[in-house]
Amino acid sequence: MMEFLGTTQTASYCGPRKSCLLPEVAPTSLTHDSYQAYYLPGYRYLSSWRPSLFYKVSSFRPHEDGSGRLLAPLRPPTVLPSVRSALYARYSPQDWYKANANAIKGSEAYRHWAGHLNADSTRLMQDKDQLTRQQQESTGKNIGQRLADIDFWRSELSYELERLVTATRALDTAKRRLECAADEAQGPLQVVLECLYNREKRMGIDLVHDNVEKNLIQETDVIRSCQEKMRKLAERIDQQMAINRDAQHALERDLRDKNSAHFIDEKCYNLRNTSDSINYYHGVEKIDGTVTVPETWAKFSDDNIRYSQNARANTTTLCKEADHVLEVTSDDMWRQWTDTNLAFDSRISEIADSKNQMQAQLAKTLQQIFQTENTIMLLERAIMAKECPLKLAQTRLEARTWRPNMELCRDVPQFKLVNEVFTIDDTLQTLKLRLREAQDTLQLLIFNKAKLEHDLLVKANSLFIDKEKCMGMRKTFPSTPRLVGYV
Image: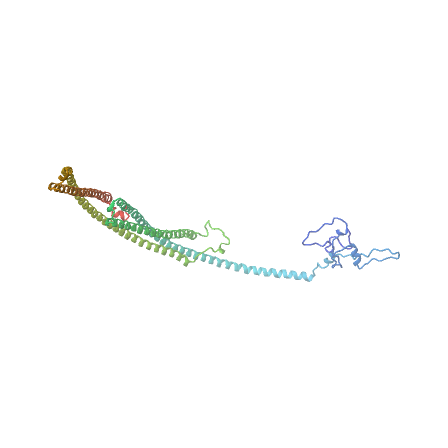
């Protein structure tokens, strides 16, 4: 490396130019690329430096001698900055005396200031101690008043919660009564449906839409209507119970929060300066985690109590409505059950009368059939009795046809024989016609007998269904206590 005379190697103005963005590159060869730019005194505006540039720009340019050789340039003057700066690191005697006087005067001022500060600090500590005690007493009184307020609202919430729980239990009892009554009405409904099903087994003309069937259908509608009323009221009670549970949870949550706040405030109220559990909590006074003010705090509990009171009022109304519905539905079902039974009794009496009349008519029909059969038997005998006279008359006529020649005379016997044959034929026709009529009448009587027997069977079947099957199931009906939900 080349060195410049008159400068130190560590001088700031002869070192390599440093970049704040790129690291310094160490030279690896003695080529012209390994030389870096330097800032030299008197050459501050050169962006780079080479040894040849120094000779070009220096004020000491090379010159030639008489032989034409190039002589070395002149060296720059030597500069010593450390010695030059040391000439200015000296004070005058006047500065020394003035500095001592200022030090003594400042000490006196500091001492007087310290005396005043100590006296003021003593008074300040006494004032602040008194202020601290007053604030502690005031804070204690405020916490005590707060505890009294919390106790008041705790008692109000507890009283309202107890009344709400009692009302909810009564409402739950009313709901269970409605459910039991609806389930109990299912038995009579099954009986009515069974009666309708059994009456569908009636035969023939007895499948009539009579008063009994009308009452049974009406009874079905009444029971189902009563069940629907009880179910709808039970659903309303479910909704009200959900509201009651919501109000109860709000009261319990508020009461639980009041108990926690009372415990915390009571603990704070009992704390003293000598308590063991006190400690520093730096920055806690800067944290404001409050969400209410005394007005909204009191209004929150008051709103919970009012909400619970409204729920209790609705609960009382629903309980009274449930009692009324149970009484009305019980009376309606009892009344319709009685009307249907009366219709059954009337219908059974009508069927029994009709059956007795048919039985009497059947007995008469059987007697008439017996008489008609005897008449038919006599007619058949009479017809058989006319065969021989007819044969005799026809035999005589046939024999008389064999008379010879002029003996074939149409005499009185001939007329009598012909008249006899016609008379017997007419008699036979008349008897046979009467026989057919008697036989037809007998068939009609037999058909009527079968019809009467079938009608008697139908009436007996209807009587058995209404009297034995239906009325056998309708002998008992749930009692009034069971219909109103008491099991």
